[in-house]
Length: 602
Image 1: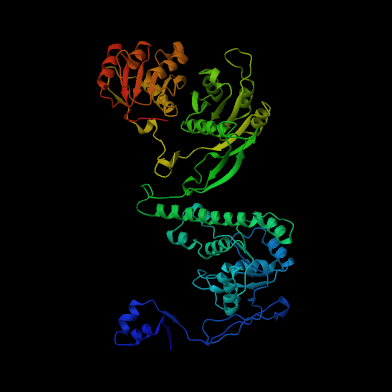
Image 2: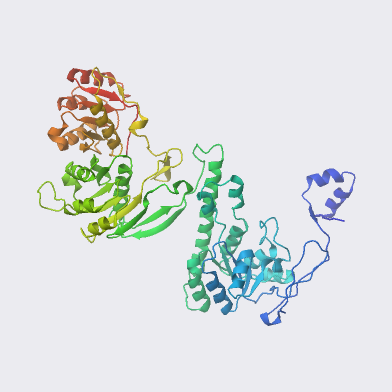
């Protein structure tokens, strides 16, 4: 016969009266099997605990209380429940040596016992078995009461005593490996859901909230510090608060992964989420920021969308000084640019702008051409390759002389490539003790999956990355003379370069080689003049690409480009004066193609 628990006599009357059936449907009633009342005896020390253990069962009317049940305030107890069991044996033995009684769950308990640690299982404390395929283990007042009770509140301790609940002094928990599961390959929605931890985050949050009385640990790297603290060897007054912060941050990062994954499972995954969290983990502190008076640090982004996405954040540094704030920005710009090219390519970057780009089957020739495009800017810059650096290329990088004097060896801050041969790496290390040598994974296209974020005062801007390449674009001829195959190829190369140059951006290129570029000027005409000054006489017969349309043509940028002898101009089009640009190019016999795609970069 089931027993219905009612909140008041009135509720009982409603449930047994003429409208009982309707009322029961409306009310949230607990239906539990009838069992005699029981309360565990209070144990005040480990010496009082008999050796036997008897599990309570859910299908009997009564059960025997386990002899090893630790319920009394005053007995030091540690709760341990782990998915990642790294260093668990050391922790368990260390706590046991310090006199702690250890309460644990499932596999963690088995691992501890195998390491010679005496363990009391959670179900012996709760007098209720693990259920629902492990979904419910620790969600019980006998556990959470012992964690959340404030030791400085007598009524809290009185409540524990009345219900036979002991306090916990240490809680060590980490969570189901949700992140690893959903990023390891194809996983069903159901499997993803089952890897969402519920009890773990609840334990962590409870212990972290009550960190004044409970030490909470979520990282195995903190086990030694925990044991030192408990031994009295460590007296950092902020230790408890630091562990609590780390615990809440751990749960927040975990929840952000679940939120991101669930959003991607929805039918709105191609739109911007109304809110989201970016889980950042510090990888290093930096000497300073953009300038010496600014503090700085470098963080890795653990968003699911960035798993295996490549990029500078996951690069391996083989050699050289530690990376600086500006080094990361420049290396990122160089790597993003060189990763766009399919054929062997070298990119040289200075202050995030590519000042030299060249593609050749012979990567040594590509390197020389990229440097010669602007040798003054290349000195002290970043060199990036999209091919493996072998011994020959490494030697060329090490020995190449500055084109302006033919004597001074070129100096670089960073070399970045997808790989190095053993011989190549050894040769390159010999160039300089400070040369930073990075090995990076090619950046994955992020269209539709990645977000590009940028901070403004009080907020963030989010957009899709600019992943449009010339292969995605229709180059529409709008002039009387159409570009020939070589000219069109040069125009496409210039367009691929110009998207990586700061606006207003102009690139002049020929034969898969950047000859000159103008960047960051408030007006397009000035950027054009800078690009021509760098290109010199080689600009004749070359292609010119602009990141945006030309607002004026006659006696302005378009006419000046035509007069300087370019063969083809590539621009997005879209100006109300586009026809002026067409007529100007027709007058000088220059081909003009519209791409319909703007590449602003601010």
